[in-house]
Length: 262
Ligand SMILES: [Zn+2]
Image 1 (cartoon, rainbow, N blue to C red):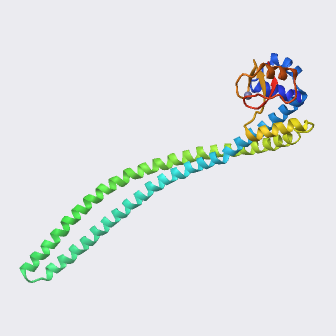
Image 2 (tube, rainbow, N blue to C red):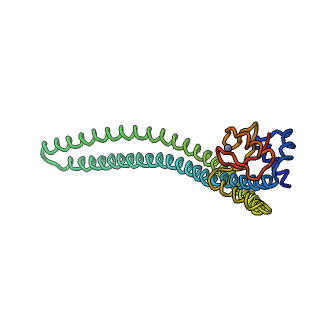
Image 3 (tube, rainbow, N blue to C red):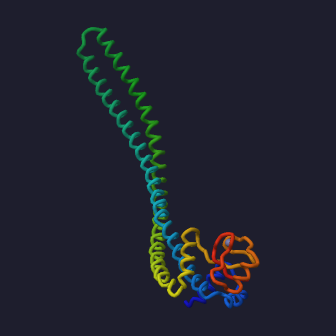
């Protein structure tokens, strides 16, 4: 693109100019300012692409953290289920052991001679039978809970699978976008490298100094006697200097280099 077209695009895009005011503005534009505007537009493009590119790894990280968060929730469910299964097995074992013990007591009953020994065994057996009933009741409650938790777990697992797929898709889009931005940035950087060629050193120095201490744009139009950088009104003298395209005309409010736009 030729410098003039570049400026056209920059100014119209930035809303600084309407197409119909462009011709008049271009006619009065100091050729050095014209070159600076090309440099500035290219530098802004590079900065913009860099900014866009910078957010991508953070966005990907945030999405990956979302997957990890979902997986943790599911792992929490699984751990709870496992704990309940352990508890259920434990109750099962206790019931089994108590039943074996009852059998042993019943065998002993056949061997004891004294009535009180026989009664003591009956007492032990009854105690165990009561415990077995309690444990079995507890186990039934636990099994119902396990059933409902398993169902919830399966629902969560399915939800996680679809969420993860969705997030992975978003990550892939971001990765593609990152690759595309990298290419565009390489291209824009290359164009920027050659943009300061042929610019008067005094203009270039002024531009660099301004760009080092404030955000671009540092070369701005004057529209209706207002600086489009700080949006404050400039003096008649500044406006006149800009209109004539005098060298290094600056806004006395913000210090930006100004040119006459309308
Ligand atoms: Zn200003």
